[in-house]
Each structure stands twice: as structure tokens, then as C-alpha cells.
Image (cartoon, rainbow, N blue to C red; front, side, top):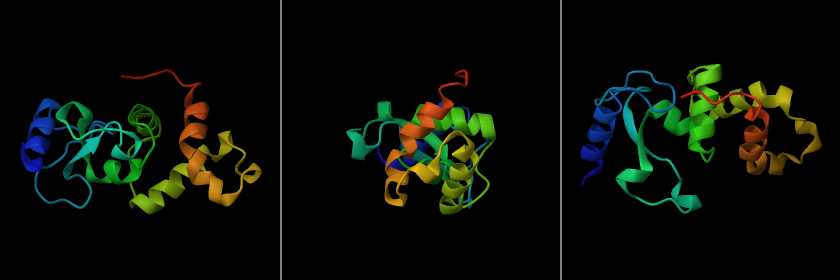
Length: 131
């Protein structure tokens, strides 16, 4: 199946809403709310290109998620609200929001991005899962 058809099917299955922030998406061009296909398990971590490993995500959430696990990113976005900035600014925004739970000064700057996912999981473990 072609990517465009997969995105359309995923979007319809999710009632037009982003998997992460639940905002309504568009199939047409839009700077932030365009529907995209996101890998639940990233290919870099052994995920595969198959419909069972895809969700429909708005362009902003897809770009902001990076390698943060899908379920963790979804919980975080639902707790703190949808991304409102570019992916780079959003990454820094989330780092600042999470900083009160993490002692960043204890880590080398080069390590921060490598351990962000694990530290974020640890920090969010205290929050109940919402579905």
C-alpha cells in the first residue's frame, strides 16, 4: 500500500485525530496539523514498515517525538498539552518542563539526549496511564 493511502486509512481509523495530542488532523497541506504516518517502534530500534507498526500523527507531534517511546510521548503530550512550537524548540521546551524532575547538571551535555527517553520514563512513572 502506498504511503498516502496508508496515512488516509490510519487517519480514518483514528477518527481524524492525532494519536498523541488528539487534535483533528488534515490530509491536505498544513504547517502543523497535516496527518503523517509515525512508526510506533522506530526503525532505528528494530521497528518495521508495516501497518501494524504505524499510527497517524500530526506533523508537529511526529516531528517532536523523535525516539521517545510512543506510549510515553502520548502520555506526556496528554498531560502537558500538544506541541505549540517547531520540533527543535519543542524538544528544548519539553526538556525544560521535565527539568524539575531531572538533575540535568549531573549529566554531561552529550549524554542528555541519549538518556532523555529513559529519564522521561522514570519521571513520568509517577503519573497514571491515561487512554
